[in-house]
Length: 562
Image 1: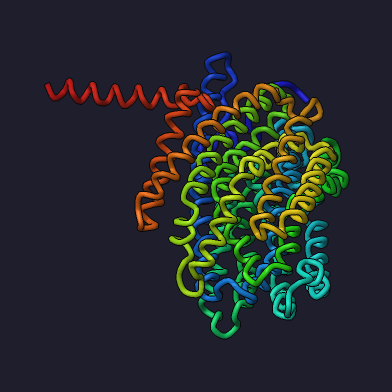
Image 2 (image 1 turned 180 degrees about the vertical axis):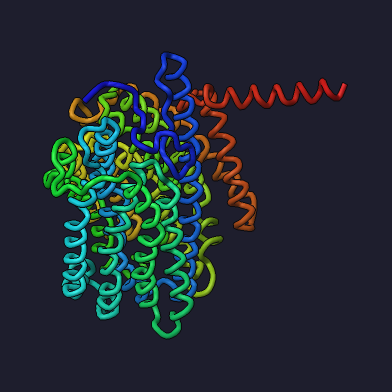
């Protein structure tokens, strides 16, 4: 591999739209490199903003989905049964969309695009990769879905042995199991498009998914009960594939070439069975925290699984939004490694870690400071009572303590798999974290119930994050660990102070909406002020151009006024 800056190569080099690729410079000296870096930075900022907006829209619809579920069916045996079946799409989303397929396919497609740019041979490596991988993966997805449908009773009994009547959970599981095939295809399309620097269609998949679930619940919910939500999952998975297929077909067919029977060379290594196993086992082990939670919660009073679910969905919103930075930059890191630019990949990863830590800590401070008001505002209506609000809010505050760990794990694992090499260290670290989760849950579920289960989640994932941060080395992106840890201390201090101010602000109002607005404003103001003072994530250098622009605008207006 030749050294050089991280640039997208191939026939889309000159595309400047957000649904295209990262623009490249002209390569003519320092001025060309500077223009390329500026264009790349602008593209990444726009792509991150687009992904964040689409993610926010999907998250809002996800909250609407959970609100509809709570309003129509409350928090009891029926919703507990559905949420056991919901484990399948949760696992499938992690394995096939968010982590697994992305970690395997983004580096593979990045390598194929780099080979296409070098023009080695008449055959198109991108189309060859699709021809070699997609049919086999489709067969594996379909076989797994069929096995889950057939084995639904055994799966339910393993996931939640304490359910008094598992028949409803079995029915819902048979419907949600179909998403293994649809999510697998959606994840394949998403990874391929992001490797091509196309973010519009992949960002819209959860919008389509949640719309399908909400519409199905309201259309057939009265007749089907909570099974309507499971049917919505099945239909939503099909929509996820449909919204991405036209865009992917255009890009795959964008360059004529003959189909190859095999995919060898560097790209073949990227799709090795060892790499696929390492990635999928890591993602499965990470998602096992949810399985552990529901196993212990199934023995608690009815509604405990639902309270954990609602609390987790709200608490993880800041993490989901902050991870948009890594979603956009992961293909850039993979492309940099494919082209031999290890230093550029390292700098990118270090900046991303500190930036997403700032974003998630700001959100966590808001969640902790006004958790009861947020839950009351979002869910307390219909069959969702004040007692449900109090239970969910108490769990949500405990979950928030682990948000930084959750976010760091999601960011750091990309550094391990960006090069397309097989590594088992992330799986080992996640296994240790899962074991810690089991131990803490077994000890804490008795005295503290659902809050003890949430504490086990937070402690286990934090242990995993520390292990993964310490384990970065030459076989992954060589992040400077001490420097990153020193930079993370600053936003943590800012978040602690902002949380204290937010708790005071939230108690000043009786209206939940007013409390949430006041708390969010005060937490944000204090956090940004302290971030500026402490220069967290280079806040001064990021905000200084904005300050200069505003000062120049005001001065110019005053001059015109005279």
